[in-house]
Length: 193
Image (cartoon, rainbow, N blue to C red; front, side, top):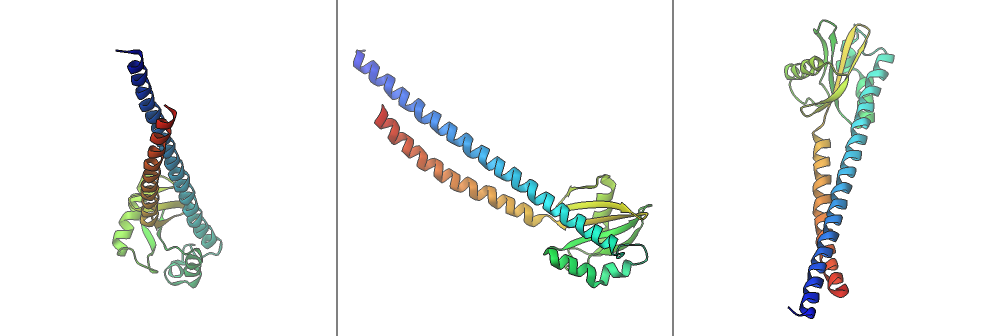
């Protein structure tokens, strides 16, 4: 093989390596960026929802609405409905006695399920023994006060769907950007080598 052919072959392989290296780096950057955006957004939304549920519980405990004997106010009170409307979210929940007996259910605004099903979900959440988290399609917060256990839940479906859309759209547009950058890197590699 002549020197010119070897040199041409070496340049051709170098061109491929340059394109592969550039595309690998760009793919890593895209995946890292999507992961970072997804993680930070999910973290922020999760903590924002937890804060809404904490505010709901604390505000209503301070106002005496969630105290024993005032359970009728939970089901029909304007104070609770006003707070939920102010936050633009619908919260569900229940008050349990320490022995696990249900005292009241908050499921009147836009019922997500029948009261019996809601109580079963709340009991499963209570059995987890955690103060907050995600259970099935619900984000929840558990608070103990005045000899009662207060569980507030929020439907997490919209957040999951939003996060899925965020990742899907980012991957679509990122894939298109990678394709464009691939073409540019091929062009530049041809010009350099």
